[in-house]
Length: 142
Image 1 (cartoon, rainbow, N blue to C red):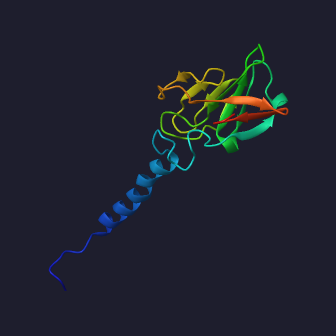
Image 2 (tube, rainbow, N blue to C red; image 1 turned 120 degrees about the horizontal axis):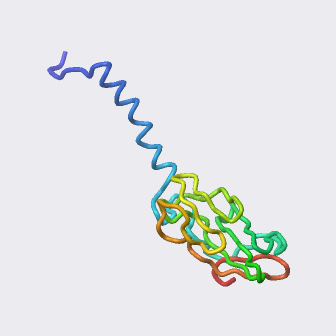
C-alpha cells in the first residue's frame, strides 16, 4: 500500500456531481461575439424568403440564417442579426415584434433592434437588406 491516502467515496461522488454542471453554462452561451458556432452576422448575402412573408408592421424570424426582418408601415425593410448581444445565444422566439433570447431572457424590438429587457444592453447588429426578384436578401452586398 502506498503512503498516499485514497479518496473517500464522498469526495469522488461530490466531484462527479459537480463536473457535468460546470459544463452546462458553456454549452448554452458562448460569449458576446457569437463564438458558439453561429456568426453574429451573415458573411455573405443570404436569400431569406419571399418578400410577402413580412407584412407591414410585422416581423419574420429566419432561424437557419440567424436573421430577423421587419417591415415598417411605409413598406421599408430592416434586418438584424438574431444573435443576442449579451451572451451570443441564437434567439429562437419572436412574439409579435419582440424577440426573446432563450438563454437569459433578454428581449429586443424586431422593428428597431433596440433592447427592451436586460441583461443585454447593446442593440442587435443591423444588416443590409433588400428585395431582389421578389425575395428578401440580407447581409453584406445586399
